[in-house]
Image (tube, rainbow, N blue to C red; front, side, top):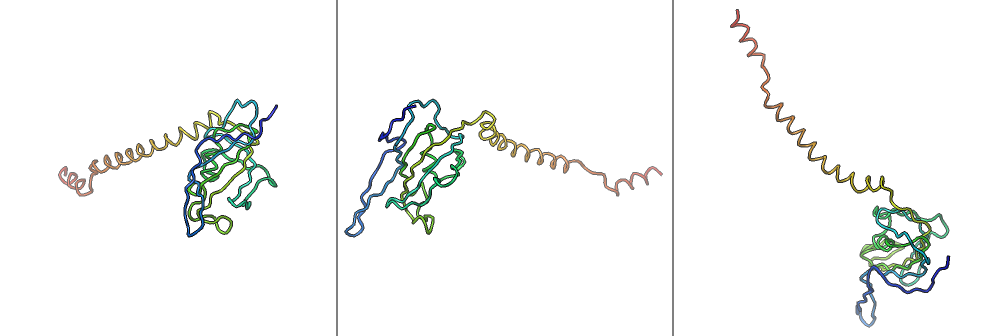
Length: 192
């Protein structure tokens, strides 16, 4: 398998720079997710979709180059797309990738940790850069699709139905006139 390297393919979003002046210094702020393909396999028959499970190695950096986290010294990170197990921008960048593909994702603050950041490692309003390699890709099985997509909708439909049935039962119970003991005694005394 031959691998093409050095591809500067930007997809998923365009890079937007906004010059913000703070005194005499100028600073560039990235507003949208940028994904650059570094390595892509020659053949790519299956691409990742929401619901698929990926095993990835990653290195996350601040824009000044400071490494904030890496999985290279650990086991690959397992990410099920759509489960929000990673930051939003990284999850979006992982959609449409092939097994063996390497990307560089530049993630704006609003798709990462926002204004709050993740102290002390990640300051607020920080744009992050992740280099990611997809080690393996497992597609969602029909059973997983059923459990993830259809079952929650079915449960949403069942809740109002069950509440309606409980209400109907309570209404019917309230409408049924129970025989009181006084009425029973009156009937017995009339018979004598």
